[in-house]
Length: 421
Image (cartoon, rainbow, N blue to C red; front, side):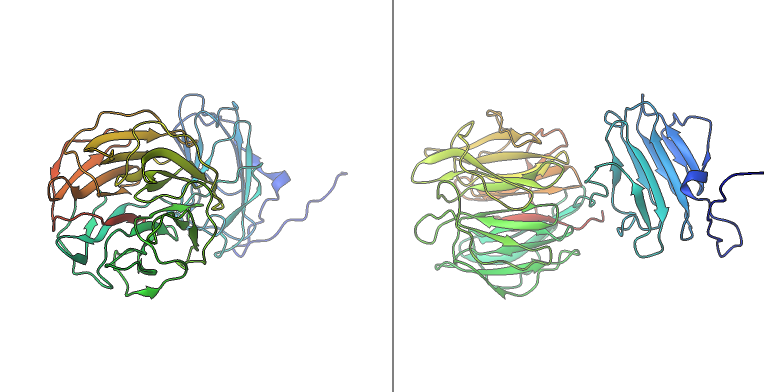
């Protein structure tokens, strides 16, 4: 007999772990929506008609290998998902989404131990697997009744607004809020009669922390959004005069010093994130006149120059992500009256023309994503402070008014938090 003897690792169970070149290739092509994979096997995955979710073994030993191949070069149409079944995948737990969506791809994975779990020996050039789970809940906070307040209202993963929670920290209005760290949020800046530079972190249970002395220029009437999947950015606003500076926030909630802004200085604008890799957009606002311009933000937090806007120029509006990768701007004041129009933003940052709104016209409201792929607008002002909300479904359709819960108020802020429903 002649040939080369492979070097194989003996598992603790006494069985020999198969090397990559010695995998047992299963001859039956997988065409179903699910597959329960076994270590030591290779599988041909056909997603011509449907996605396929591959569930990995619930237990594994170092050196275990599995190979998955795009049999029909259709993963770009119907993706192949991996459920790591309680074990880590590239160091992330199985609450993360692992999606492979490049046609013609081959994914070879090996189990490295409990810390990093399954890691690819080869997965071509896909950079977005795994992807952090989306936020499920939201928090609205602070604002003005007849005076500034620090109360908050939590929003469930089904869009139900809870009763008032006595606030923590300095009561203020005209602040901004954004998510960070994948499942937490923070409120920042604002005014109490004077401009402030402070923040309040919100943990993944919706509990607001005490004031953190801020970094950067004190200001109000600014906007904020998450970017890069786990960081945040505050931008624009007024110090008494309008500014275009920004402050980046790390994935641990630390606010950085001022970055000289790009684009037209303005206040009372809105912002939200879009795309699969964490881009964002600041849009609309007031420069002295009411504008519809926007500024895109890269996944590394770099703000681009002005893009001529689409739709009605306005201020005091809200913005939130929906559909997993798109944005909706809604409501606001156009210089002569409050409105209920909305503008959808695609997953490449293109702002669409006005959509006639549904529900109460108003301005000075707030908005947030919730439930993974939906959004809501809530509170605001029209002849008096309001306590109402409008849910937005995963297709960007705004629903009729829902009578609100909690204290009617305006000039508040909102953000998403928690990856658990």
